[in-house]
Image (tube, rainbow, N blue to C red):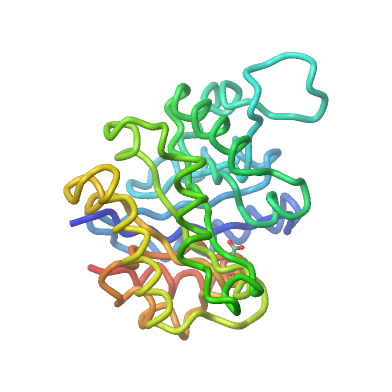
Length: 254
Ligand code: PGA
């Protein structure tokens, strides 16, 4: 069975103390994870070390960065490199979140660089793709996401591709309370898998976890995660509330 993943994306929320409390409240639940289930917390940079030591003992739990630089090192004030993340034992990083694309003008080509640098440092990228509302209204969402995969991922070998995680996040559903219907999510996830299969073959495509993101909540996670091609979620708002995120973890396919 493919990995089933609940990934929390805290974004630029919570003080250090609030973050510590939230992690405690979730970990204390001692949710039993099966070997194919994984829980990831993408926390702000200054909290990475604390969060990593909090989850160190818990198998199936990991900490992620929300971004990293496309550059190796050097005079890039304010940037954080993949090598730095690796040096503090961070093994996951969100790459190409739509907020990075929109507010910091990250494009598919730059994201390909970030993917490369993550892989060079044994960091699993959680690569985000997804269309804005206008593209969906025009009916061009399939071609749009296909291009995102082609331009940021298709230079990878099959072996490299197999190590990454994809998150489909329709931009019109992020933070809006508007969720894709299960039909829309399943249809797009199947499309993404078929795009991967055309390039890398079915066997590789079948192994890649594809998470859904965009207003995942405790009350819709069961339905969304029940879709055959939806392998969990990347969760913003609801990941900031312990009770909500605990229920979302419990909704992962067993
Ligand atoms: P949301 O955010 O769950 O608040 O919609 C998801 C995301 O941006 O990763």
